[in-house]
Amino acid sequence: MKKTLGILFSIFLLVGIFTGCSTSSSGKGDKVTINALFMKQAGYSEDDVKAITKEFEEKNPTIKIKPSFVQYEALEQKIQTSAPTGGFDVVIIDAPWTAKFAKAGFVKEVSDKLNEKDRADIFPGAIDSVSYQDKLYGMPWLNDTKYLFYNTDMLKQAGFDNPPTTWDELLAQAQVIKEKGIADTPIVGSWAQAEALICDFTAITSSFGGSLVDEKGKPSVNSKENIDALTFMTQSLKDGLTNSKSTQYLEEDVRGVFSSGKAAFALNWTYMYNMANDPKESSVVGKVGIAPVPGTQGHNGMSVNGGMGLSVTKGSKHPDEAWKYIEYLSSKDVQKRFAQNALPIWKSLYEDEGVVKTGPEVVEASKIQYDKLENRPRVPWYGELSTELQVNVQKALLGEITPEKALDSVQKKAEEIASK
Image (cartoon, rainbow, N blue to C red; front, side):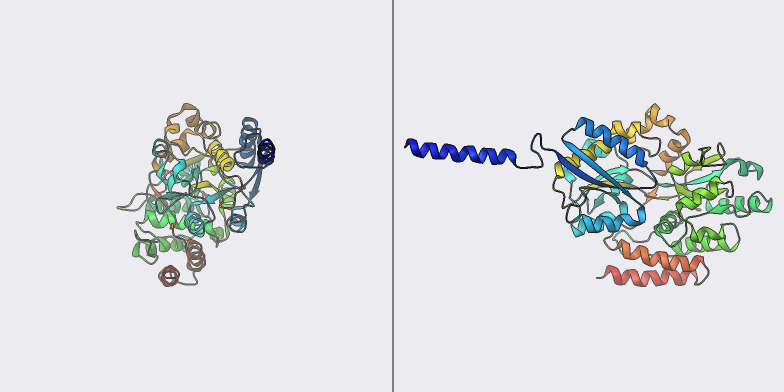
């Protein structure tokens, strides 16, 4: 009997030793490394992310974070190849990708991680960026949209006291600015054959009352409102009001043109306001106005939802630590202190004096625009739709086909894609 008890005791002791030596996601004292993937441009800067990460590591000494940064254009593919294996534990995802990633099982559902009180304090557009079929697949993090930027000095020279509130008014102001020789081509856009074009196109079509998919998620690309919006874009190029090189430009090109004083109007993300007011980057410091996107008769000015979230990949070996890092990055305290380059996802922080001081004009415009956002279609086949739109909208802008033919072509292809 004593011998048997001795053997059992030895077995339990060995089990305990081996269990204590094993690595687990929640074991105390275990040093784990979290690989995180971020976007290089727009929103929080690399320096911001690195500073926040350093804070997190100091507060959580058992967790090491290895952040990586890539250009937006490479981000989606990198996530798709790494998510299943856990090459990255934390990834930043753009709003249109959430449906595809959720359906493919690339990211974890985290609906139970966000309580109702916090959810109510987050802008709906930010929640949309990580939602699919009423479930959450990440935490909102980067709250962004496009605004109308205008050169206040150019408008005054042309005799205008206020920025345009409709697209017709914008064209009228641009025409006067052109005729008076203040700017050769007063408007500039990011209309290259890229996702940047679809962001502008979404903002403009929705301001004309259009939508790329209906309430049931079915394609509605060739609606009259969408055709009118594309006709507006093509005509502004033909009339010489929009810079012809816009069909080659991305957002950074737009910033460069506007900051050099060669444009009176531009659509761009929030980050451009600070950079256009930076003497090291711009020649129009103090002349930068920001306003909500113009509308049309009977329709509010709408902008594109540029919200991005942080998700835990399905293949992550340390999901608990990954989520803890995400919670810290998106926390009210952090977003309050780092509001200079990216406004918070939290509604309550827009009354905070420190946040308002980072850019009173931007905060004021955002209060209006964040309630008037349009999502790029949240459907699993968005990538294919975007590609078709980029090609055909570009053809229309270059005058190769009519707006009607361009959108009819996309509608036909979208119906085929959606029916698969």
